[in-house]
Image 1 (cartoon, rainbow, N blue to C red):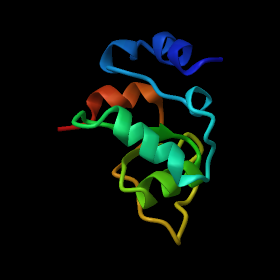
Image 2 (image 1 turned 180 degrees about the horizontal axis):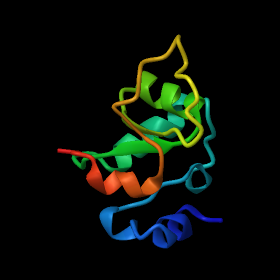
Image 3 (image 1 turned 90 degrees about the horizontal axis):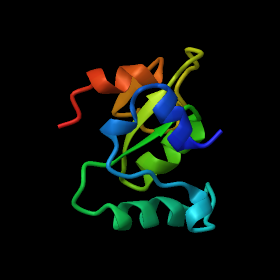
Image 4 (image 1 turned 30 degrees about the horizontal axis):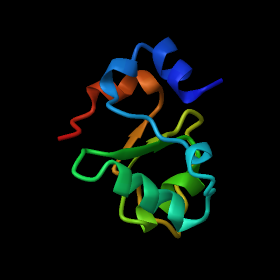
Length: 100
């Protein structure tokens, strides 16, 4: 299922100015290029990587991005990585975050 469809089904699509996936640029994690392309594309915007994968959060934090960890299953953080900026249990919690 596409990211856009997931956000629409969760009633959250209106909160996003843009959606970016690795498929658009053909760089894939753990390449730091994927995060840099994302930051360049949305430069000047409030941007966050949202992922349920701890390795995505670690890669994004390593590249200097802000992150939201969708921790649906209460998994531990990677002890060798920076902690995410926010942690949520479901996508619907995004609208309650103070993302200023």
